[in-house]
Image 1 (tube, rainbow, N blue to C red):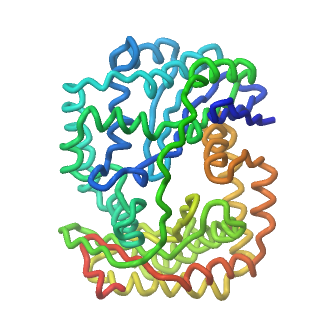
Image 2: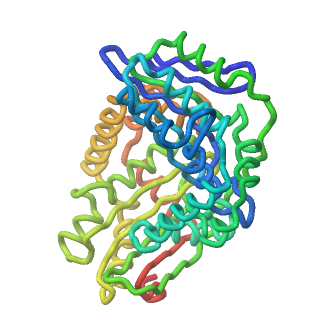
Image 3: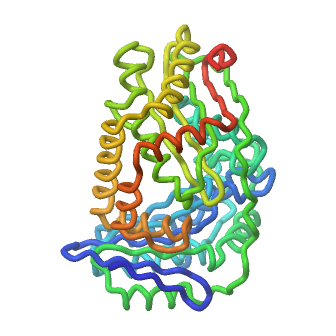
Length: 408
């Protein structure tokens, strides 16, 4: 049974022991990402996530890596638009070491100036790789089309100019201002002892001063067009409509609608555009929910000469599904989503991630039974209604390598 505890200073601790497990996953989940960055500071959250691994407390980068790998474990991190995560996987006896290292990273990083300049080069290389990967870049373009100049539109990697301009003070300021207790979740799953994890959490994070972090600006889906005419072999296309906040009672219905329309090889989009027409190699629908907003989107890659046809057919296919989605399609989508959920929660990492995300978005740990009941409570009428509701809003259109005006 998962346990939820809040330390006196506001740090949240989630613990889910898994009988039979021999390993553990533990992480620090900070509810802050690129949407919290100030104007002109795009990419700072991601840069800081990189920089803390260059040295912390009495260890340099090599010593950090050796400390966790000496016990057969791993330590890594990621940054998104609304979250930064530092996570470790170890055998059960070494979970304390993993959390100690994570605490050092965010509480006592060296942030050496010379290391900062070197790491900027690494991130600029990562940015260049993204710019050379159209099926990754199209997601950033779609967020820009959907949210315009709002912070949620910012790419996680930032821009080359802002990356080059960052200073050590920017990095220290970010950690000091943003990593406040009320935004921190320590989540552990696997072969873990609740009392031991709580003791570690209190010792390593319990003295953080409970100062409120800066507010996160609300986002509103506006819609628009982002057309990138760079030369590519294939045209990347995407369109989005306003989705739902993650905690919306209609979010499960929209998730199943998206799965039925474009979540697998049996979906309408895959069958009609790829199998029946040969219009696209890759095509899929997806949803993303945040605390205050969301997206329902479709991505596809197609030949330049058929881009307009492919985009028109994809949008028509989604619109028709909102009117005539069948029970069989809903049942298949539900089976896929349930299977994916159950499979992900078989691993300690999956459980730790799920608990933390649930706490961040709905303020508590949602049980597996609760999540399954939500999915099983969606009928065809609700799935259709969810599709109709989002399609009635504005649209965002993005392309790379094609004439989006013709495809829209």
